[in-house]
Amino acid sequence: MSIRGVLLDLSGVLYVGTAPLPGAAEALARLQASGLPIRYITNTTRSPRAAIHRQLTDMGFAIAEDHVFTAPRAVRAHIEREHLRPWLLIHPNLKPEFADLATDDPNAVVLGDAGDAFDYHHLNHAFRLLMNGAPLIAMGNNRFFMEDDGLSLDIGPFLAALEYAAGVEGLVLGKPSAAFFQAAVADMGCETREVVMIGDDALADVEGALKAGLQGWLVRTGKYRPGDEARIGVAGAQVVADFRSAVRALLRT
Ligand SMILES: [Mg+2]
Image 1: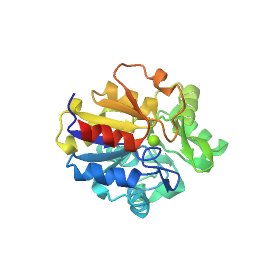
Image 2: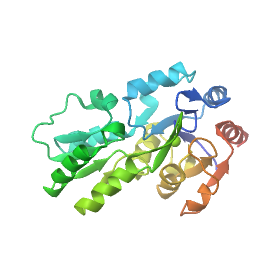
Image 3: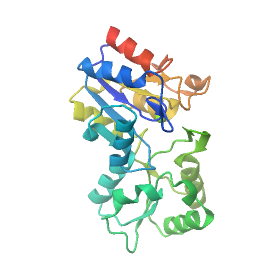
Image 4: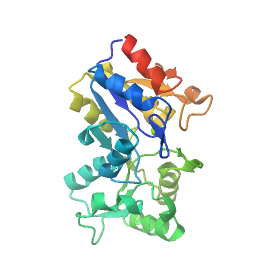
């Protein structure tokens, strides 16, 4: 099937931790030069979009900041639409993204990858708000991600703990939410089925994209573990060695 637009996951596809993957910057430049529209779609919730953009630039990736779709910004848009006052269990670095929102007398719980802030005191405070009827909103449900020093727990396990304790279901607004993929697809002016999502997370990136009607390619870098493709519960996934191979395949089509 022809491909007229590309959605790229960031961490684990273009870089790991603070290091670009070998050849990724050159491959991205080739892909950009081909004229295919590209958007970047990330559940990274440890920094605001401006900081993610700066980090990408420092690593040699030339990307327009407004082409980066982040889960925190999708959550922020939802909060504003619904006039919610969030209690934020998020990473300290992400606080500027929400600094101007009303947070007094909170009536919603917002969950990001809070890192060390995921302690008993904070999780229990979130639990009590949920028991009082506050909705639970999450910036993703990824199980883990790859850092410089190894795999690390992501939002998913903490989301599951709160859902289990309070007997509620959280609203996930990052990947694999179809609405999140669709927002980026719409920004490119493409048909959903003509867009490929390339990521290192078999479920949030590839299965999520396939379920949303996109094509899905899994790279064997970042958090990828052998056999991950077998966990994808829908047909149609393709597996490529890395982002360089993905770009070679895209430019052949
Ligand atoms: Mg990733």
